Amino acid sequence: MTPASEWNAGPDRTASAAVPVSLPFTGKWKVENSPLRRVPSHGTHLLGSTYAIDFVGVDDAGRTAPAVTWRTALATEPPELFFAFGRPVLAPVSGGVVAVHDGESDHEARRSRLALIPYLLGQPARLRSGIGAIGGNYVLIARPGGGAVVGVMHLRSGSLRVRPGQQIREGEQIGECGNSGNSTQPHVHVQAMDRADPWTARGLPLVFRSFSEKPAGGTAFLARRTTLPREASIVEASRGSGDEVRS
Image 1 (cartoon, rainbow, N blue to C red):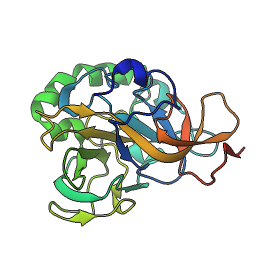
Image 2 (image 1 turned 90 degrees about the vertical axis):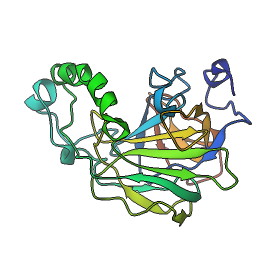
Image 3 (image 1 turned 120 degrees about the vertical axis):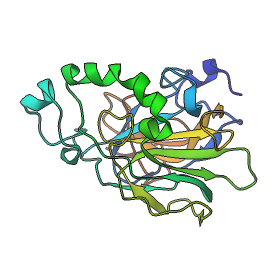
């Protein structure tokens, strides 16, 4: 397995052991919990999440929602408020669907620190409740030839379009972005594992084949290949082959 030190070296480092995948969406998304920032990326190795990465949908101005109100600072907010909610989510790899879980509700979002406190205190109870309470509505896809299973989590309740045993192609829509499971606002969580059972799986490094990235504080989107995006950068599907594709 790739040492953590290599994954913290920068966005242009690649790893031959990593699982290559594609961005599971179109449009602009902000990166959170990138393995380039730390490993394990979510602070735990549980449920095969060692090298997981999160993406939060944003608009052209980099906002996750169109408004900030008193609820943003003091209370919860409806998931429908956020740009990511309901956006199409695509298969990051081709392969066979080995597990599908639906039926978890899309709960209220929490940008407020006050609202986050009781939610964080409830994490142990959610973990005891099972994978659905953590991953929400999800799809697990086994790559051809075995060796890696790619999971996409926190999908919108009732939006899943695939079933176990189905063969799907990379880029095919599998559902919509939601706020189900252990999620504080609508986002897409992607991870790779060495088996289909998250309780016994080991997380595997992954890289994205091709995408455009605007680093935090940057003004231009840069073309990236076979790597990971940096924390807090904005990414979207690649639109060009040069180093700087647009401003």
